[in-house]
Length: 90
Image (cartoon, rainbow, N blue to C red; front, side, top):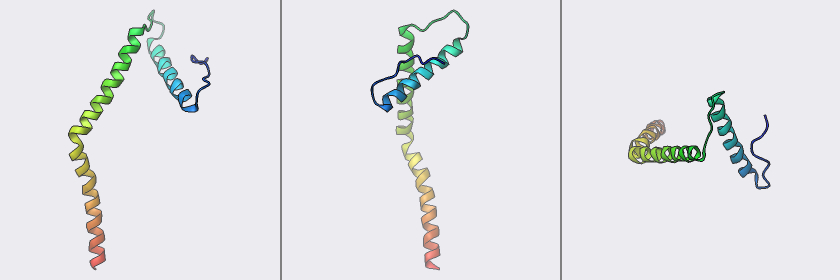
């Protein structure tokens, strides 16, 4: 496979991001297959909007459900602490 993005003189982290973008483009192009289609600049903008919306949606779910998530993990800690206290008392 020929890399779509030339090697970057920048740091390693930047190169990894470029490779991920290249991999995403490869996946999108493979989905399109032999169809006579192309990705115009509007498509890239749309994909960026989808990513941002997904991140904001995940943040909203975490924000609204944070107390339940916190309670779930604290419940396990409370059970472990009570077991430790019971064994200490015996």
